[in-house]
Image 1 (cartoon, rainbow, N blue to C red):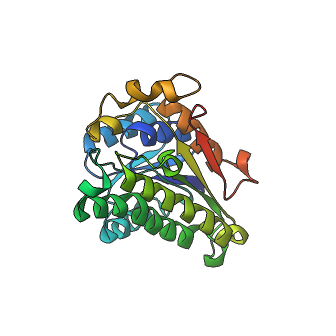
Image 2 (image 1 turned 120 degrees about the vertical axis):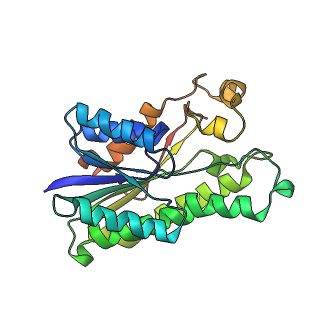
Length: 251
């Protein structure tokens, strides 16, 4: 059976780049999206045009019912044609830059639901399908974190940084929990990457303003992060688990 990878938040940016790259390496790809159906279907069509296999599936991973529907749809659509062998927890949001004393509960709760709790719920469902404990054949989970997890993002996104630090803690704990069950769990920690997330957070000039703090003196590309993600998915990283891989240009 063909190996299938489910990528959350894969309609644009890092997720879209990882979906296209994984497909080029022979993975069948589930392109999850929440709102941008046109962008998700464009990713799927690009993969199919290159001879790959891809399906778009809408679900809000920040909602428990959304995660349940996503995996139910996976079982119904692809369960008979391939096995879930990979999960990339890429879905993530950021709010407008603010100090902690200006943040309200609603903002931070939504951010944590998507960035942290949604990833945990997706990992739970993936383990139930991949673990040898449940009759699975193993697999790989890659969580997309952020350099904010260790920089803290003071004066901008402390709650976002907190959500990513929690995601890394989950990566380490889960990796050790399922290591004997054929599942590897790792994280990628991107730095300043040229994607739309900066504009969505209300700061489109952030890259230009901060690029001087990067030792390599440039921002990274979504493709460069995708290379790290797909390597961790692959058998080439077969002895890697509980690892956090920086893709930050040295920042």
